[in-house]
Length: 257
Image (cartoon, rainbow, N blue to C red; front, side):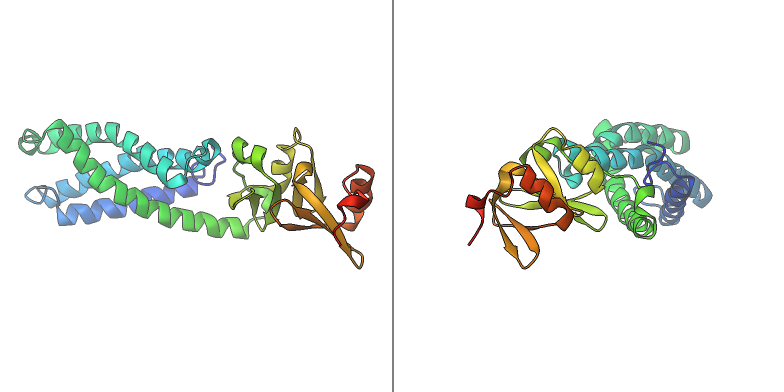
């Protein structure tokens, strides 16, 4: 996990904590949720410390949701919100403790659910804004870095079992299903390796096809194309034609007119 560009790099944490400091100073100057009556210096320390702790707790939760959620079939937004809400439980407890240290009179008027509710009100928009900023930076870095130097996200097992074919698109792999297609950040060779148990072949540098997904084929000049059951046309590299023919993929009765 420490090689994860979203989590493990010192520069990433420096950026995250820098944004947390900026938010803490801004909240300290504004003084929301009854903190304005306190000393401005105390307010800045209070809010900055709280944003730092929140970043250290919630950012790993968000990264885990982004990395692990799709592998289990959950949308990143759903898994992200779920894990952040769970992470808000200890954050609310820390916020309550900090408020008792800074403003015990104000803390005495708060109930348990009040702490959790206020934590969510502050944390969800803050972590959403942080995610937008940091993921945009990560995307820029990914486009600038060589492909081999970047980590990929393993494709969900249930999608691999149902895939008709895989298509490489830049730094992503598109999974073609019968009625739709999905794009995942992954390395093509790793995705193909994960499909070793299925009867299929990489028919082109950018394409892997399941054998039972092939409905027919046709040749135009010297180019050979497979026709899949969902109507998709997949090109076959010239150096793969003989291999497919030998494996029985190109039976004459399946040739399209």
